[in-house]
Length: 260
Image (cartoon, rainbow, N blue to C red; front, side):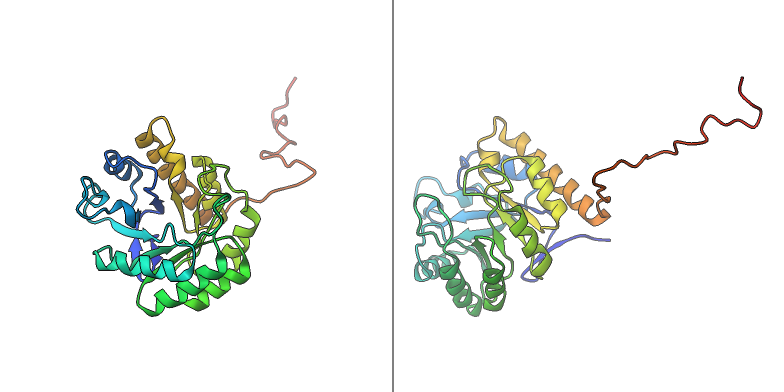
């Protein structure tokens, strides 16, 4: 069976999406190659046309660009950023990110819904970043989102699956791919999220702040693959308040010939 990640009709083999916001341009290629990512985010300000260094010059050919609307404070700003990204050749994918809160950097779910609806009608493949809320996720589906990207913890915190229970609700109730975005700090946390049934992991800070970014990228790749395999295999049952032997506890001393 071929297990692919399908977003907006496009198929991907990798379930690691690389956020490039904190990466040095010089190491992006190495990180992508070691992590096996097929999609990488792009903040428009880093595609500095006419500047000395352009992130597009460092992204391997064939990689799907996911421009984000970082810096947008409302739906109107997010829509303008998305349109500009498409005009400069970044394609139809867009990560809608609307943040008004400068302290906690939490997404504005309601402005995100508005932007998603506008951009989806214009033919964008919209992947909205959101605080995990079932009603909001349903509204994003109705607005035309191609995936739903709930945060696990505040951006850049590396705190892990703080919103685990709410993400599980989305996995159980929403038919679109659920991609965990923000807060994953360790490969083990990425593996746990994949075991829950999420479709993919967006990772940035955990890799960018590691001692060896290329090696950590590889570790995330392997963890995500392991978690996905465990989910597809079906996790074993959990037994509470008692133990159950994995081997028989009776009869192992019996011998037809007798033991003296």
